[in-house]
Image 1 (cartoon, rainbow, N blue to C red):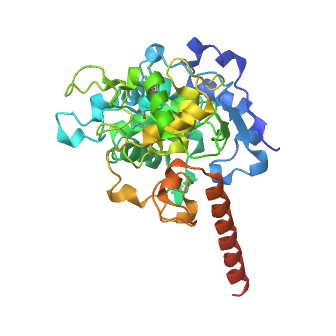
Image 2: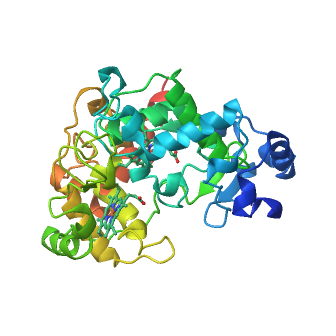
Image 3: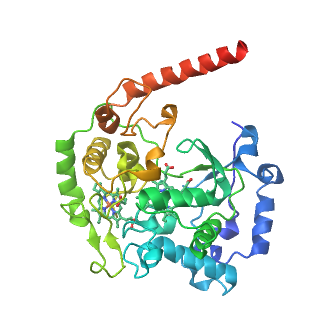
Length: 365
Ligand code: HEC
Ligand code: HEC
């Protein structure tokens, strides 16, 4: 295809050095990526045939020990952004003494999902994320900015409320994501982003088996009751050693981690922690699917208010979105636990039909 794989130059491959890249060197790096590939200024304007490709599975991991970064204003923001991502509850969690600082509705951190300070392929890494926004998102039916997307994780994943776009916290998170994204050209297609697309078993999840897998493989860290394990004690703002998977301090029911396929794809290549990697999953697909079903079968903070407007166009709903109305004839239960192929087939037919109707009405005008 027309996509070219961008290689990060060899001199930036060593972890120690990559943290020290100075602005001038970055300019040189971007130029060396190829003027033709990096010229587009936003993702939507990038011609599809000329889209650079970055593969995070081989891309050198940016240095996350930021202690050697020179003490500049910008670098202080980058460091604060990383700290905020890893220790979210200490700055913006529900246990903040100042109520106006309680933005996150749980004591989880961004890093509870964006693993190793957001650098692990297929664990929603934020390497390159700075280069791919603004971007169209079906959840909203419109283009969203990086700041909008960060706030989406505040309102959905952290069951909280939006932080102001001009706040120091937002600027710091964006600065850290910019740091992680250095060398990734604007509009790049990124391999290894978000979760790994893995085909699920062609059946409904088996929650009885899921519970067995959970007890054998997960409860040692996440607890029999799914509540996780705090670093310290309630009220100390220190958050979690092992984040909760359900219950009142977990993600909300609007988060993608409340959907079975996202959870399956995340768990399959990331959990159990310390065992699974994207190239060497630890669980079978069947076990990962069943345990994901078991995890999402438990309630969390309810989906209400603004976030309940997600996917207001039912044609854009992901197949595992557990709230109707749908453009197909399947129940919310089947949308929650599968099997998904029959849903996909009907949804594709419905979209095709809509497309034809639109084309016809345009032609008759
Ligand atoms: C409960 C897990 C979870 C938490 C907590 C969480 N996120 Fe996310 N985040 C995800 C997942 C999963 C995705 C990818 C979803 C998708 O498929 O689009 C994502 C996507 C993103 C993206 C877009 C990435 C891309 O590739 O387009 C940004 C930016 C982001 N998160 C920032 C944050 C920040 C900042 C925080 C903390 C304030 C946070 N997230 C907290 C799970 C989480
Ligand atoms: C050895 C401890 C350990 C085990 C065992 C383990 N996890 Fe985790 N899990 C973690 C840690 C720690 C994180 C936070 C991410 C990180 O630090 O890399 C996490 C994060 C998660 C997340 C995303 C954050 C959230 O709270 O939603 C999910 C989902 C998850 N684990 C599911 C599972 C499932 C399912 C199993 C069993 C198959 C499992 N984990 C086994 C330690 C563990």
